[in-house]
Length: 308
Image 1 (tube, helix red, strand yellow):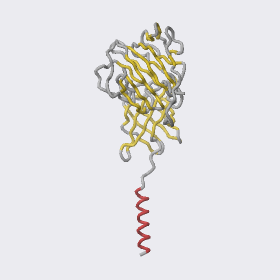
Image 2 (cartoon, one colour):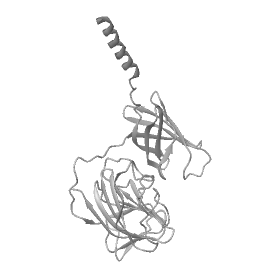
Image 3 (tube, helix red, strand yellow):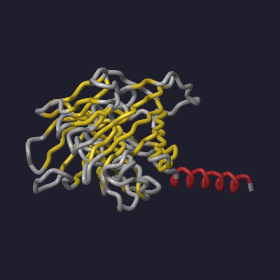
Image 4 (cartoon, helix red, strand yellow):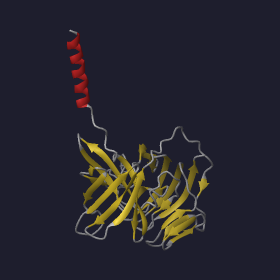
């Protein structure tokens, strides 16, 4: 009887060991990438996750554009590979990404449509979870009445201020605050002509979209969306030529967006950086960036309340 019980117990242990789930592949998660191009370093982002039992899928954000799905990520012996179609690049061929995982670091090459490969490296993206609610400091009025004090342009400056209204004369460089911030509440008002496009980059990394799409259904490319990631709950835009307002709260990755006094994104997590972000170092403070390289745009009453 004792022998039979021991054999049964051994059988249970053996079966349990045999059916134990394998350890998850270490590539899983989100990665902040830096691409070393001939024009200087550019930011990018990668997410890898499971789909079903063994297939790996993901998302990728390149140096411009929005997050793109990856239908399959190959990962074996710490070697990474995937391929995705081009987005805004007018080329005939895919972007092929290869890399190697070394501890908590990634490095590799990206090759677009058979062109010269570009080297890149990456680190795990921080969680940015906050252990307590922020305490808010003194509001800062970022826009002066008649000059660009506190701001600088990246590239050709086409911005000017008159009567407390900031506008770009024509498409040119983006405008960035001299100050950097972590968590904050932001109020600003904006106006654009028909068909125009701009954006507000929080910490210089996460774009809240500005676009004249008054009849569009909610999706992650319309006014008030976190571009490529978070769709607004409704299209609360006004007509082109009318002043509109954003009230945005950013705490860690958690963002709330109110457009024209309607909350359209409520305390949702931003997965990663937007294309054309200033950098991919998500753990450090960043500036406010106003996009000026697309269409005409006006801003006024820009007030930021930082966390203490």
